[in-house]
Length: 260
Image 1 (cartoon, rainbow, N blue to C red):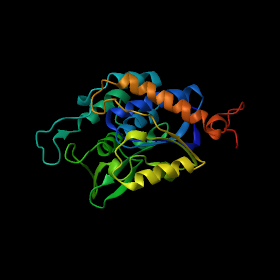
Image 2: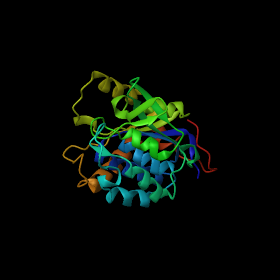
Image 3: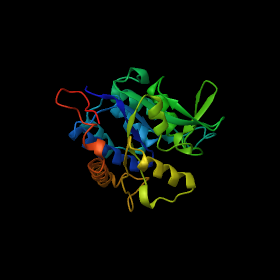
């Protein structure tokens, strides 16, 4: 695997919209771009974990097209913390990968991003059982139960940061490809979302990919083929428009990343 250890891939959360990440991954592969670091929140972490585990893109594509919510949640028999129970994720991870691996043993440096409900701070989950990290990052309060890890009570990372760029930086990424879902049309609840996006656009070390999901379903899987296609379109547009996305990301003839 010729991964670039300095290149990070950040995949935002957004329910079924996360299928757009599959199209982005396909375009990266076609261009020989192989991030060595991947971070994600919620559905972005689910796709990111598959990529971090080294699954073939065809398998990730098939999984996205055939995905059903029952694969990660079922009705809870004791709904104190949430209406649904996320223990099916443990079985799904083991079934897909043959085991529930430790994150630190994955072929790529991966981290899921979660929120500690006790401290209201973000938590980078880059070690320990993969299924625990995924159960934590998808745990929308009131719907899916938080996950205990030591003294932490972990839930959806999107409450703190839906595009965990800082997590990728903490893992060692000097350049990042950021896939931010929702894009132009989303209902912005906080001014910091607008400011944050502007900062990403202006950062020369960032290529910002913004799929446009207007008119597509976020909580059913009916639009997955269109979402994958939109992820491809947005990735091509972003990479074509970024100088280092065209040049210095790509491997040179001797297999090393080009400078510049």
